Image: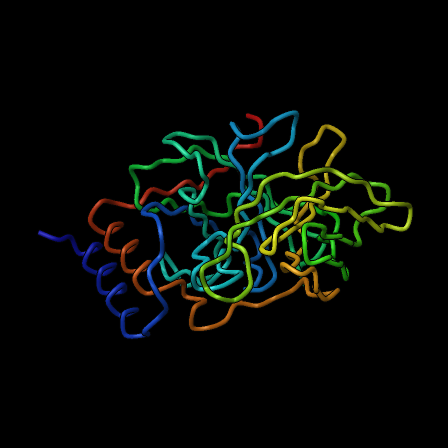
Length: 291
């Protein structure tokens, strides 16, 4: 017989059905987490990576918040999540890495945008539990001061294979350039949020950086991320450049678009129903990176 808690959760999921929210999420296991101070939707982005994909300190493959339910659109990875409370949470689908496996060590680093600019949370590190429908990380990533996210500036595309990426970031600092060549599937000119490391280039004393990708395709999206001398990530990522590099400067605080801010109906219903029947795992204490 269904427990009272399970019934409440299921009713909540069914009530979301009445909202008519979006389309189905891919994947079956979700990690969601709150942040100290609960910054509003539109003021947080993030980078996630698997420890096993780090080479010489550099994560070779990353996911961004655009990697969560990319078929709906961008910025779906920090949204109002209706369980266990209706509050903004980061939402990560680890299954969207190309080589994920049970018990992989996962890292997520979050950065502030807009009114939260200059704040970093994490990295928060955990082991991926594929046997749990939903893992809730309560205030898992502590807040620290950090650099503002880099800003993509106007670039250029030669129409064949050469794309120039320009950005403004922390002066005299190496920045990793990551590239995605996979569309979101939403028909919105965005990537699916999964990126591969391409190169590293440093900004000058004024904070200006540039890189020329000579192997770009028509669908090539780029982001830049400040790096530490050892290759590890030192901050949050820029907005993505679009395939023709026509990116506007200052577009660093994009809000969620309701009603898709509630994730998607089928995805939420799947998670809540599975959580009700199989149990929800909570991780109130974060593991420090490298521990």
